[in-house]
Length: 228
Image (cartoon, rainbow, N blue to C red; front, side, top):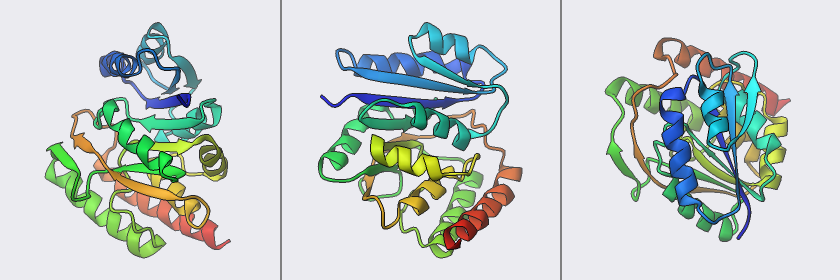
């Protein structure tokens, strides 16, 4: 079986990271995988818990943002395929089989989606986050021409070649990094959007008050770099 690397960005995730890594290990029992936890400047025991679970731990001295953490992990990965998943496992690890099927069918990057007809939302987001997400998707679609229904789901699988190319060129450090990756992939790598189950988990590190303006500035920067 193709060796897989699993990148988990983590910032102050000591409370739930252990359970997440246990679930990842149980699903991959008997399978050769590399689990990389990128500790993005945590102030708690995130790194210690990851190390105790047998993960490869990479650390940022200060908090740089989820995009920076994912970039560090993907560029360090050694597997033929690289999965990026959130520390809360809002999408269960079992859903990686759906993304694997998309890569088997010829895709270079498979993105989990909460907004396809076959997707299953087990616990919806609170309405302020849904409204913010809807507006953001509109900006992404009409401002950058990205047609994916869900650009922000934290569950993505890519070939090592695609991952290294995309994250070598990526520059966004915060949560709009997903958009930049899809923008960089256009006309270069084959992208598949795959329906996955998903549930909202409390404890998000995204502050709604600052996230919107910052993301809008990131989109402008992505567009300008693309034109350049």
